[in-house]
Length: 547
Image: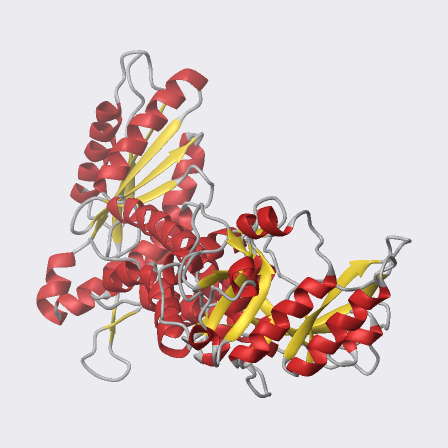
């Protein structure tokens, strides 16, 4: 059976409709959860060796047991910074908040400030927090005495996705303007320009909003525990050899249970990651130039739409490789996403294209099945109903006429001298003759239930429900007149045409309880035989059935 074939205009329209659908679905992020699942699958085990200088000084449970209840005196942190300075640490991110002065002992602040200044390479955090009225955010900075002597300040804002998984980081953020590097970025010491999606620049930014910029997806170095950790108390007590600390990039942060932030990442599965290790991953990613940048929204939408348009054009083509396009349609977006991720550190969300491909394939398959179903009941040359549909319709209408008590007319039509036409002018002219006759006969079947059919080489039929003998006779005369007016080009020369005529046998009856469709057909066939015997190019009406 012939496959469904569309004109190029319909193919283009088909492709553009699904391309626009894919663009809309992609732009609205309708399948964001499925996209994130694909990302986790592709990037979850994409480990790499981090910079060996990175390590964590962990405020762990053992440190709390030995140094006492949190928070500790700031002089303790000053002592730690002195130890790190002696060991020759390259840079320290002290991920602890000092937003208020020590009200009990001002010497604590002074000691910490002196240690920070002496070290000269300490980065302190900036936190975005809601103000007292719970409506306007504010920046929580270290107290001036400490902030003024720090090597730098950096934000600790962590981007948590709606499903609770941490996949990305805004490398810059701040109130009114994103002027603070993230803590991990500051620790890495990587120079600007930083990677990531940059927000469109506006003429005026609200001074009361927390703005973020340079969004990247983290390529984690590995699962929790990838980075070496040293207990805070061991470093403080000098139990860690200086050569293990020399030249290190250290994050000093909380890892103790109940106090440390717990983060779920694509690599951690069901194991939580501390905020300190998260910042270490940010630094490692930048040092390894391994940041994954999502495609800009316009490019994501366009690429998704283009993929679907190309797939739709391939699937709707008339070539024999159509089903190859169908087989490649679903995996192609995932393969492209994988190639961009692993080859160019770019993230393309593929599920919108996959979903639109699936809908398109389902729609095309249903359309193809409907077309095949129609083809199975249609004559390929004339487009009229074929013999199978003719017989099925005749049985159905015969039963309907028996129930309703309304007359049913069957008209059998035979082309006069068709064999001579074929022999004289060839089969191509014969085919053109049949096609024009088919259109002429079909014009007579104007009502929804009327059926024009071709059930033999030069044999046609009309099923006309609710048609009395007078109406059937009028239609037969009209059909004969129209056929006489046909001019079929013979191809023998310019202006050379041939004419034809038809002979019709018709029967109009009110079927009784025992009257079958076969009886109606036999009666119309008998009338057709009588019309041929009478000289053709006319019609005869079968006599009424005996009741």
